[in-house]
Image 1 (cartoon, rainbow, N blue to C red):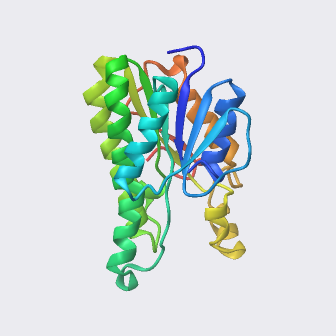
Image 2: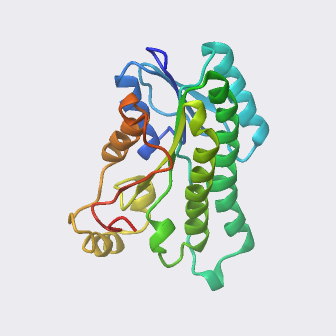
Length: 237
């Protein structure tokens, strides 16, 4: 990889994506954040406004990055949404919206990235899934399906591109202190935190640290792996 890597992060304006953007920028990497909203000003981070439900906008963003840097070294597929509801009350639209954003858009981002990385014969892709993919939390049939799909998709792609020097791995966060978690309400969050062996919520920076590791040269022989960052909540399930 080049000394100053080109790093692309989806959903980089807040939460885990923002923490990852800061972490890579601190390493001296050139970071592009793809999200609908503009994130805070960070040296080394350029935001591109992208509606990830629009494949044409994804292609345009990657074309711009390719023109400006000539390579794509690391991609963090982090963008995701929730539309929680018990299954019997969940609408088709809410199910489809979560699948489209969390799974289909992630596929489009990864497909576009791999085309470049395979030609370079180098690259790191890190997908952000969730322990909800294998624990299954009530009211999250759509979210669990999307995040489980990300794991299966990442492992299939990892097998396809390993011989080209490209790794594809997954980080599966547990209960992390972000805006997405805060909407659950303090009482529910406290009840869930009580079930975590570590006895607390994780931080976005802790997840970002795992992402940075999987994108490093140190992790060159790791691909198709799922790294749970969950305080022991899932115990590697």
